[in-house]
Image (cartoon, one colour):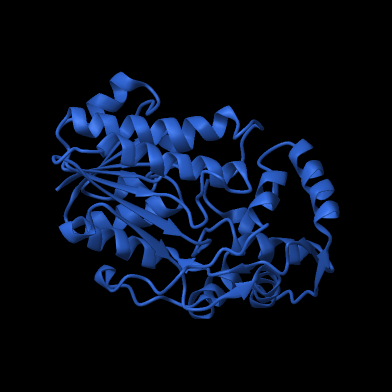
Length: 312
């Protein structure tokens, strides 16, 4: 199949593109900068194209002639607004809507979309609200159309080599004597990136997944504080975790937001921690995923890969 992977240079994208290439699919990956996809250029069935996915004419050219379109685009930080700022609207709502419409215009009958566990148009954070509205935009675009088929995936927090989650805690443990953490009591169900890729790869060949939304989580539930403590220990720098009030955490996040570069934590990230991030049940059996535990994978890469050595 000829598969367009939008957001293919990101964390999930690099793993998914490698799997699709191993399965002998022709994969097209658009990117703003060739440098971001330099690893993908080594894969034999991957075509890397420098283009602007937010331009309708460019998007039409990308979608035309494809059998499947996959949307992996997601951002964790953006400008403020109600119900969310323009950054979240552009990436999480307008882009999925435009992708769905382009699929229908060009007769692409299969769209896979990665949302997030906790996506809710009435959610506590701009991230959650925009993700919820993005799902609604896709469903609305395909409403009453018999020539299109969408599948939505809602993963919990992801882990794996090069992730931004477990590696962040490992990095902080190298520099701080303790780990002060707001929302330390919030429960999460971390899911291995390879399991998300397996679920998506399975859905490609199974039309029974059409029109369905799948939650994806790992085999065990942890508190955020437990995850931070484990990651610190696995990196070789065991540290105690100190739970701090959410108000103090928001002051801390505001400081991070004022610093140059991508913030470690934003106030909107903390808003997402107002509720547990766990699945309502086990992963659907038709996805053929046996969930991988955090302990089975994270200790190996946290011991050997410093966070600041990650690829962009």
